Amino acid sequence: MKRIALLGSTGSIGTQTLEVVSEHADELRIVALAADKNVALMEQQIRQYQPEAVCMFREDAARDLETRVKDLPVRVFAGMEGLIALASLPCADIVLTAVVGMIGIRPTIAAIESGKDIALANKETLVCAGHIIMALAREHGVRILPVDSEHSAIWQCLADNPKKNLEKILITASGGPFRGKTRAALAAVRPGDALKHPNWQMGAKVTIDSASLINKGLEVMEARWLFDVTLDQIEVVVQPESIIHSMVQFVDGSVIAQLSVPTMKLPIQVALFYPQRRQASTARIDFAALQSISFAAPDRENFPGLDLALKAARAGGTMPTVFNAANECLVRAFLEEKIRFTDITDRIAEAMEHHTIVEAPGVDEILDAERETIDGIRSRVRL
Image 1: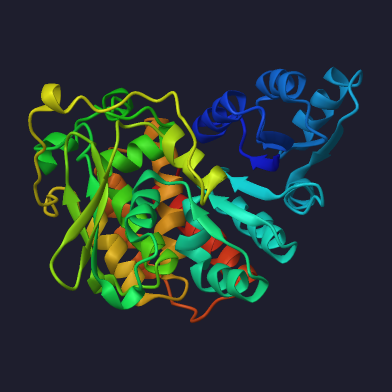
Image 2 (image 1 turned 90 degrees about the vertical axis):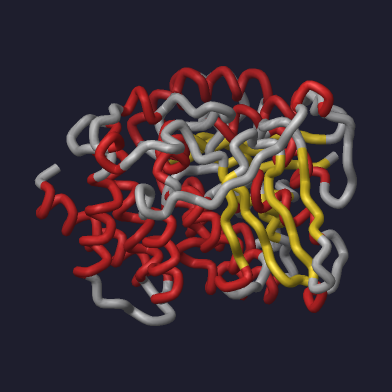
């Protein structure tokens, strides 16, 4: 029985993780759940999965939840201290981090220091603190198991191949709902348009990132840390059908790809059961019906987010944090219809220009850079 602490249980990844747990209830058990503010859904999850401890990040939500579940033997925590407590629970074997934003960094560090394996679905943890996280994981002998579909695919393709055999990682992108649109056309799109992803069902923030191609930039930054490669060894290629989730090219020119229908339940299950595989309820590819799989280069002119991410990654230090923090703030503003879609990348570029890099930052310096970036954007854009 593998015991799981799930941080971010009410979001898209969290709810799909619980579906996987339900399908494998004889082998997986939830011992902790954490979420931001969705008290009603958290109460349902507690009653169904009976965790030992839970956390609501917002303290008012935690008080409400505590009242709702006072008939149950469950401990209720709140805030960052609560997330860290759940990530460090002695009874947990693995911590799946699916919280959104940089609040995932400290709990991930706490889990690693407690000797827990990490099933990682929180991009910001490696984008902003990859130099800290990967060194800590090596120090404590902890595995970082990727949950993002692209990184899971790369991980599966690499298998036990020695690193010296690796030539290039190819991260695939669907192109999102706006593939083929010009910059002028993109200026007029609305949040409802951007949330209509052609292939994937994801949370709002990740869906907007996919529409802007910023998601691919974040994934490139993650991949360099996860697989210990240079940025020059990573290539992004558009694969509109979202059947190939990423590929690995070896020094002899051969390429191995991981294919499946577009569902997050598969990479979640792969991470939770690694190194074994289990039967899954997910649909299978019908190759006869598929008929073809197509590829294209990313449109860097109309979607500059990818190149901005690469610029931030090459600059290093606190610059990836600035890129990430600016994007989070601006995506929220776009969803609230305070800015245009094209303003997201324009304002990210502006934030990067205003930043003075701190080299090899610690967690406090990373969080300071996040706050300064958001404050700067709000003052310039008046959000």
